[in-house]
Amino acid sequence: MSICPTRLAVGLAPPSAAVEMEAVAAYSHPCSGVAMPRISLAGALFLLVGCQREGVPPAPDTAADTKAVQTVLERWYDAIHSYDSTGIAEPLTPTFLLLEDTIPMDKPTLVAGILGGKATGSQEAHLRELKTRVRGDVAWTTMYNHEVWTPRSGAPEPRDFLETVVFERIGGRWRIDRYHAARLHPGS
Image (cartoon, rainbow, N blue to C red; front, side, top):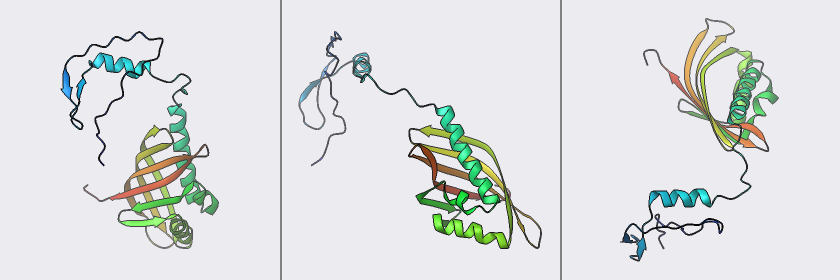
């Protein structure tokens, strides 16, 4: 059974609205072959606006959500720098997945790797040009990350990444669900 993607429900205007629709032309429905009236664009827009439910909640405060998402990210990096295992793991969803270049890491693997690195050196991250979009309970941030890995013995190693982080709001709190880090190589 196939479902026609062009079906449109019309005639659902609220009873208080006086709607007079003029058929512009008749055409055959592409899935059923039944002759159907065409409505003007203005008529379709009137139906869409006029049929909205009352009591629809107001649009979310995206500026506040953007700030909240970026704060989660900043606190997460603070926890990484201080090797705080709870602060590293807590903002990650149970299904968290990191893709660093071509290496996938789930939540337990990432946390263990970060904490294991404490014995061999330290890392600093400098995030810049954060661009965050919020759509309901999902948000994503793209940014540049200039990291410097400093081994216990040896010279600091700078590493530059272009990153995208996907957040999900769960129980009213923003959590990190996906993290993709693509390493930028000199000259790119």
